[in-house]
Length: 187
Image 1 (cartoon, rainbow, N blue to C red):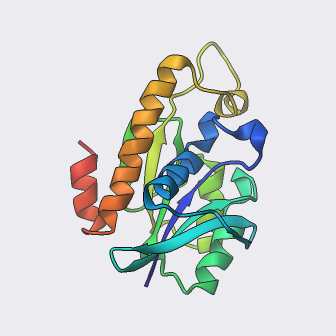
Image 2: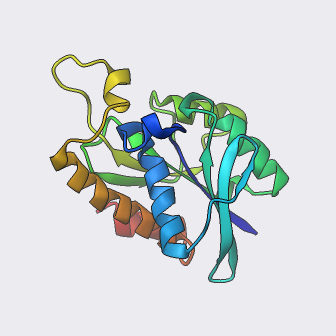
């Protein structure tokens, strides 16, 4: 059995440290904690893998750009025969205040194009997710400009805490059922 953690984001230096890339940031935090190295590139993604508590774990950052994330994840899951129950997707959410972390066992895309792509390619909404709040733009700023923008100093502090909390939830999910992780982390 293989556990797959997918962080959503956009590849390239110009997108590093932007609101839309918080999923990548959580994956990077997990790789740092576990000593994993991103040394595999296939299925239009970059991967790191290893064994944690006796379980094979894969960390994935799709390189397809956000809106095509499913084009990476579906072939990866097929290749490694990963069940949708063993997938957790981490991504940004405009409908949660900055730094809020919410775990869900399933759900709609909620207007998030990366999630729309995953749901389309996986042909189900029944997969676990960890949403990290980035709030909505203020002052009439376009959503696309906002999500591709960088954090303010205040937001950066909140997001760093959220990244740690999301990574903690991922780690916990390797030891207890996801429903229990949700009860612990959705407080």
